Structure formats: structure tokens, C-alpha cells
Amino acid sequence: VFPFPFDRALLAQAPGLQFIHKTGTGVDWYPIPLLDEAGILLANNAGFNATAVAEHTMLLMLLCLRGGVANFAKWRDGIWERSTPYEPVLLEGKTVGIVGLGAIGQHVARAVLGMGAQVVATQHRPHPLPAGLESVTLLPLDDLLRQADIVTLHVPLTDDTRALIGARELAIMKPTATLINTSRGKVIDEPALIAALQAGKLRAAGLDVLAQEPTPSDNPLLTMSNVVVTPHIGGAAAEINTRQVEGAIDNAARFAEGQLPERLVNA
Picture 1 (spheres, rainbow, N blue to C red):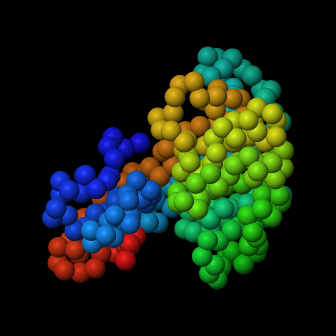
Picture 2 (tube, one colour):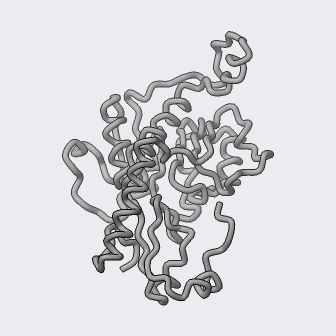
């Protein structure tokens, strides 16, 4: 959540602004057409936190599959509870659907392949699969949703991806499927997700991002026994924080020296 709108009125207060560097990856806060109109360059640190987000994705995925997260509070209170709200299942032998096979998606693909899963994926911009991912099958989104036991989202928030997973898409998924989101909360139609989980039309969900952050304390997702929620921390790691700062400083120096910044979002 940003504390103020990034709009024409804000830009009017900075008439000399020529370059913005976002230390993270997501740029959905920025009005890119307005920046283009004003001739302001926007760059980010795309790919810098890919490893951290992929690892967090695996954490959420495995917690959802094991089914024991609802017992965490009991264990902390000294209650030895081995039964789980829903039966644990293996990742091995499952089909993982990766929506967005970019840097993060590729890390996730390698991890789940190494644990014995199969991978199907979508690509926004088709490109040859890198070494080690030759077994990945590329599918249209609907086909991926129908086949996958676990669906994990790795796309930016754009007009095309807003509510990408809504009531229609959730209905296509297997009722035994698990949904993971470490991208942006608004990529999922949250009320539709809540309804699907409450109706037993989805096995579980692991969410590092929500439609509103911080989310209201009465959000049903926070108390569901088959949902794991973390507060948008997937990209965090001590090593990543250092890279993010260095990337920003290096790009600022490039711009100050008259060079084109790296990782430009707009041309």
C-alpha cells in the first residue's frame, strides 16, 4: 500500500524529475503513460529477488500440501495435535501449473521438478525454454487450470492480469487443487477465492499477497484452516536487500553519467 497517489499533481511538484528507479520489481503503482508523456524514465530491479520469491513460493506450497498449518497455534500452546484439518499429500507425482514462466517461475519449475512433480506453464512472451526445463509443457491458461494440482502465479499486475483468476477460472480448477500467489493480490478476484474455499471447491491456498494490504482483520482468509497467509514478505532476504540497494545506486550512477539505465520499464 502506498500512502499517496502517484499522479499528475505529484509530478507537478517535481518539474525537474527525469529518472525513477524502483528498488523492487512491481511497478503497478506508477502511471507509465503519464511518465512517458513527461519523458521520465522508469527502471526497476527485475529479477533481483527471484530466488527469494521462488523459495517463499515453495514454502507456501509445501505448507498447504502438508495441511498442518492450522495446528501451529496449538503446538505453540503445548498441545500435541497430529491430526490435520485435511489429509497431507505429496508434491511428488503432482502437476504444478506455473502461470508466468519468467525468472521466478523458472526457479519454481526447477525446484518442483527436482522433487518429482511435472510442470505445465504459461508464457506471456513465448521464448525457448532454458536448459533443465525441456520437460515443461506450455499450455493456454484454461488448459493449465484444468490439469494442475497446484497453480502458482508469477505475473505482474497489469490491466491484462487484474482478476486473472476469478470465479470462472476457479471453477475450471480441480476441487483438490491448491492455489499459490506470490505476485500481486489483485491478480486474484479475492471474494471469488473466498467463496470457492468456503464451498470446498478448492483444497487450499497459500497467499503472500492480498487485494488490500494491510488486509482488514476480519478478512476470512486469515482464519481459514486451509489457507496460509504471509504479509508480502516473499521477496525479503538479507542477501536480496543488499542487491536491491546496489542495483539502485548503480543505475542512478549510470543515469548521472549520461548512460541509459539498465532494466528500463518504459522505453
